[in-house]
Length: 397
Ligand SMILES: Cc1cc2nc3c(=O)[nH]c(=O)nc-3n(C[C@H](O)[C@H](O)[C@H](O)COP(=O)(O)OP(=O)(O)OC[C@H]3O[C@@H](n4cnc5c(N)ncnc54)[C@H](O)[C@@H]3O)c2cc1C
Image 1 (cartoon, rainbow, N blue to C red):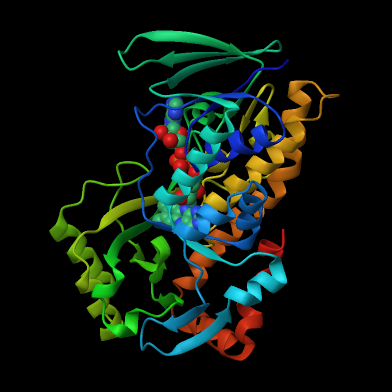
Image 2: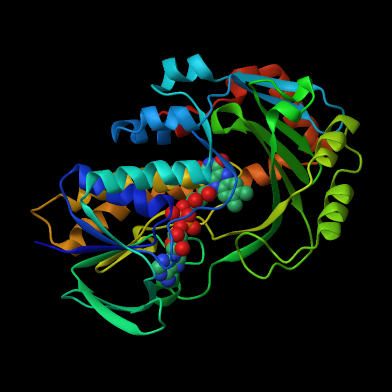
């Protein structure tokens, strides 16, 4: 029996453990943190991700923690005019077999963790930080650092690395080059929805497009919280990808104030209502151009470890969930050896995720456009309406 180790217990690693368990595979999941916790704020799950989560039996817990927005309403950040509306709830259910859901990352993580624990097919080990890996024709040898700083080693038939955007496995086996600071930053905050003026309490998802910035908001946590994100371009150098860049509150306010100049006062008033912001420096890599970018011998990458992307298509977690389902399917091809199974997974996934990475980069230009391009975008949306905004290639997958 081939022993599979998974490194990284975020959304991607847990989704993989769950999907593998559903098909009858046991796994060992190694997570560096002392506790399984997830930080962050809201994320959107397209029907492509939600259908897979439903297949794993998670519809009920997700619906009790998530929120189903009625529609996506796109506006000009400059004057607040509506550019287009995409109906989502029932329309998406009809067209794509699942609605669009918004959910706090911590809630999604908890739903996955509970399901993996209830399933009992995965040996979850905390305080195990992977620090080195040897990938040979016979197996993989992992060197781990434990909570007391001691080291231990572990042998497995194959490794699935879901260790995030800063993946140690990707750096070690694929080389340190590739991860790039995009010059884009996300400022995220959550506010109790009942404290907001009525105009901000609709069930729609809002997207406001401006010059060198955009703003996204939607309800999460069953509608209790209002998730607000300002995505802007800045020349500031980040210390690395991830949460809580060293930004003083007054720096944050100055960044937001500067970026929102020239936008409608309605948007500026909303941003001023929020007190606690967290900054996330956005990094990505060039879109995947071959299966080698996702598997090498007995090691495969999944989620952000494989394909860091800008959140401008709202699909990072969605792609990790799709990866997880595809990986489990190929790991079950008993007639293949582990290298072949991992390669079959990468062969299936690289074009799809490469396309999503590329479209996320393109959206950065379109969302933040100025001048003629912004004018063409706005008229394209006004004339094309829902048809111009929908993305069947993404959601029907
Ligand atoms: C501003 C912003 C908005 C976003 N919005 C959306 C959205 O709307 N929709 C969407 O689908 N996605 C969105 N995303 C992306 C999404 O959050 C990520 O793509 C997703 O969480 C990636 O999951 P992951 O499991 O691959 O990585 P992570 O969640 O980063 O998990 C990696 C795990 O590996 C562990 N780990 C790391 N190194 C080691 C090691 N050496 N040894 C052991 N363990 C290790 C970490 O502790 C962590 O638990 C957004 C991202 C950002 C920044």
